[in-house]
Length: 413
View 1: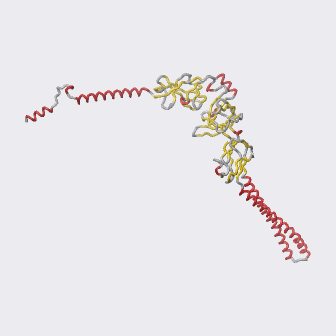
View 2: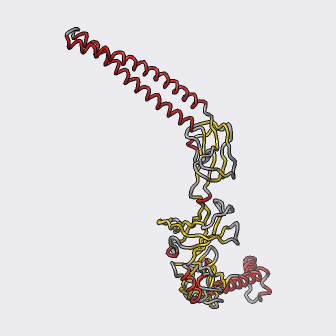
C-alpha cells in the first residue's frame, strides 16, 4: 500500500515550479503560439492596406495638339483610316475546257495589250474535229448540188405532163407519177439544204473550240501572276485559284478602307483625301472618295469606303498598305484653322468612345474623376479630344470597365 502511495506522489504535477523548471516542451509551445499571433497580425495589417490601396491603373499625360482642333492639319484632315490598294479590274485568265499547255508567251511583270496572245494550248483534237466538220460540209454541198440537178430535171417533165394531161394526151396516172417525182426531187433539195446548214454550224462550233486554244489578254494590264508552264494541264474549274496568268488593270487601282460606323458621318462621296502608302511614308498622294458602300459589317462595326487616286504612278501596286486622311472642304478647312482652339491627344485606350463624345477618367491623387469629352480624329494609337480635357491632365489607360466616378485608384508604373 505504501509503495502505491509513493508511486502516485511521483506522478503528481508540482504547480509551484516556475516555467523555467517545467521542462523544454512547455517552453517551445509558448514560442509557437507567439509566432502564430505575430503572423496573424501581419496578415491582417496587409489585408487592410490592400483593401485601401484602390484599383490599379496605368496612366498617361494628355498632350497638346499644335495647330487646329481635333488634329486637323493644315490640309484639314477630319479622319484617318487604314486600308489596302486593290484593283477594281483584274482577271485570272484560263482555258474554257481541259487542255494541255503548249506554250506561255508572257512573264510576271510584263505589260500586255487587249487581244495579245499570252498562251497557246494543245489544239490537236479541236483541229481534227474542225477538219472533219469541214469535210462534211463539202460532202453535203455536193449532195445539195445533185439534189438541185434532179429537181431541175424533174420540173420540165412535170410541167409537160400537166399540159398533156389537160389536152388528154396522157392518162391521169402518168401525170400523177410525174408530179410525185417532181415533189420528191424538190423535197430532197430542201433536206440537202438543211443538212448543209447543220454541217456549217458544226464548223462554226469547232472553229470556236480551235480559237479557244489561243489565250488572249482580255484588257490592257500587267501580268502579276504566272501559274502555268508548258506541258501542264489547265482546267476551268481551277481558274479561280490558278489558271494560266493573272492580269491587273493598273489604271483601276484604288484604296479600300473600313471606317468605324461611329465616324462614317464625316465621310461623303467626292470628298477630298490624301493617301499615304506604307512603303512611301513621305509621299502624300491626292485622292478623292469614290463611294461609301451603303452597308455595314456587323462583326467589325465598320463601313467600307472606296478612295480613288487622282494621279497614277508605277510605284502604286495592288495589296500595298495605305493610310487615308479624309479632308474637310477648302472653305471649312480655312475657317477651322482660324477659329478652332487646340485640342489634346491621349492614348486611344484611355477613351470610352460613343460617337462624337466619350468618357475619360482623370486621376487626381488616388481618385478617378469621370469626364465627358468631345472627340476628334482617332487612329490605331491615339485619340484627339476637342473639348473637356486640358493638356497635362493625367488620364487612366487600359481596362476602364472597373472604374467609376470618385473611385479609389492606385497608379501602376
